[in-house]
Image (cartoon, rainbow, N blue to C red; front, side):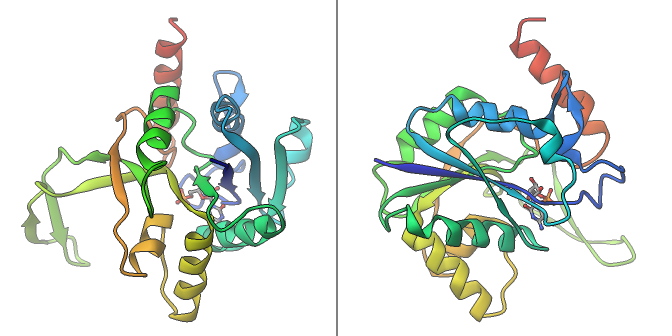
Length: 230
Ligand code: C5P
């Protein structure tokens, strides 16, 4: 089994409102993106990790982070474009049947046990799957004036996380077809679903949070410190 990893890190963090993109903010003394990279470097089945950077990125070079398994490539204006471009870059190395594991740079708290659980569960699957967490909040659908239209049953709702792991050939085809169909997808599973296929859910830990807003940094810091036994 060969696994290639892609870390989309080309976002500019519009929602975070910071001068520094959130993947470069310091978390327990180290940039967020390096936590995510280190978690994946601990997985020996991963051949190489492609970090996808914005063409305007001025931060990566200053990190001076080098590892034989680490490569960089340039992304686009949407996450889906960034991942698609990395998949194209991989075409001279990856075989159709290889696996691709895509993990957002801004999920630095993913645990080794979740990564192993995802790989072990998905490796015998034909399509692939993703870490996700069952929703516990009551979910409201609202209109654009913020009045509730209805309550949605949370019984069958899960929050999608990363990593997401799919066969290389299938994922490339899925992204190509979403572009042709003019669809906008926000994760790999969404692209795969548009082919009529059904990704498998693997329950992850709630601690695998995505850094989106400023308050998420304090939570991420407490998760990492708790894990280090501090
Ligand atoms: O914006 P969002 O939080 O959904 O971004 C998820 C991940 O996708 C982040 O790690 C971000 O850097 C990355 N991204 C990207 N290219 C973009 C937009 C987001 O690689 N154009």
